[in-house]
Image (tube, rainbow, N blue to C red; front, side):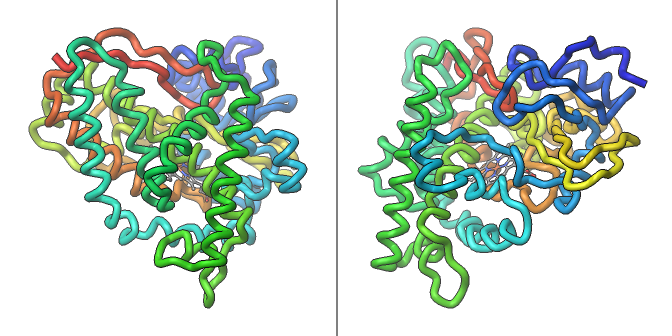
Length: 411
Ligand code: HEM
């Protein structure tokens, strides 16, 4: 039975749909009536460019697809970054070098190498420097006499600094890398005066920078994490182009996601004053996970069926695309009590904001949680009287739940 609540021609990947309201009431209707639903495509949107796709909206089904890579491949059409001809010519089939777009066993090989960067020890080693950054960011914002934009003044910098620290980018190169990263993700929004060409040029610059870094370490190994990735002698190591594409992916995966989690988190606190008071008083360790559930910065990723299979009572055919709607899963009442309530003490909180738990589960999760904890600690101490000074201006995107501007007042 088609879901009666879903109008004909409705497409979740139409940026004009997601632009205004997440989570969508249509998700709730589908979860109840038709949790795996074929959506004929109207638009031509990054990541979803064919005839249609299956919209998967229940928590259990999103987990099932994520944890069965043999049935649902990541290597076809999962593109989240578009490349210019130059990169495609030089790197031949560039998409396949992106970790998110790989299947086992290639994915397993590369992930085993890159996860050396994300061990608990490696993340702990960054904590003091990131705390100092967070305090400086909040202190700088506090000095504004009137209202200011929370996105540019607070949420943007820490995620970029965290990636730079992780890779060991020297201070003198950081502003260039930050500028390229910001241009690369400034897509889909007509109000943002950056063309797609500029975004693609920036991706090329980041790639070239990281490939040079890798080549340097291969020539002159140092005592740093990059060396352990590209020049490990006894274990596997990455080629320079593999390292380049990994850094390029981090500049997207670890940047905009965390920025939007922080911005949505601030908005949620300021529109739920009781939760902000609770946070300032008790700093519950569960807050960051609830912020990610609430924000769900990545609305959806997709997979492609490798064979005919059944999913949620529907017959999925080989080659069909399957959209995993994390924003819907994160409000599934089968899993969450009062899913539409923002509750920073929620525990357990098995949200899928970092993915459905399969081989591609977010590699940067611990780093992201650390960043969110550090920035809200710093903001709560520096600006306890922060107030909203306008409605958020949302990013126009088909798959990122983003905010471009959030005006606040330090009081
Ligand atoms: C993958 C979300 C922060 C690095 C993913 C996936 C999601 C996600 C949904 C895909 C999971 C899947 O397909 O099953 C988020 C959110 C973040 C965040 C919401 C912030 C709140 C970060 C950070 C980094 C990072 C800070 C690193 C600096 C990665 C990488 C992957 C990934 C490398 C690909 C893993 C793979 O394909 O094996 N993330 N992420 N993420 N994320 Fe994150």
